[in-house]
Length: 124
Figure (cartoon, rainbow, N blue to C red):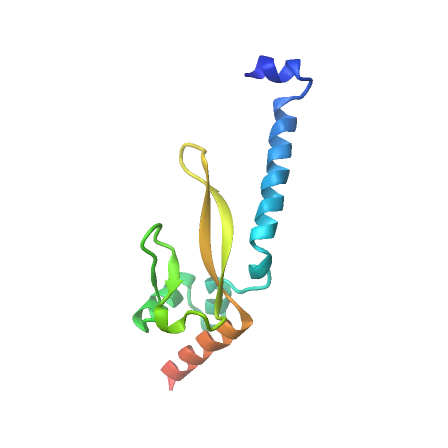
């Protein structure tokens, strides 16, 4: 393959750089709706919690659950279609160096307010 690339007058590095630019553009478009959303880590931090603790709490409250396919968190049926969350896509690499797209649940401003109210009501 490297010899074929040289024949075309393009280095492997240039091809990889172009591929990264294409992936970046695609991720930017996919993540347009989640751009200003909040991660579980960001919501948990003021409460001196970790994202894991917040997600466990929300699972206990039956607000989120683990998804069936890849183990990502999803809203339970009762809380869907309320504008609380969006999906953010990230690229990860497995131990073989292969790229895979992962979905992350992120919270809109409305969703963040909802989660904060659930936490604050629990403290009372």
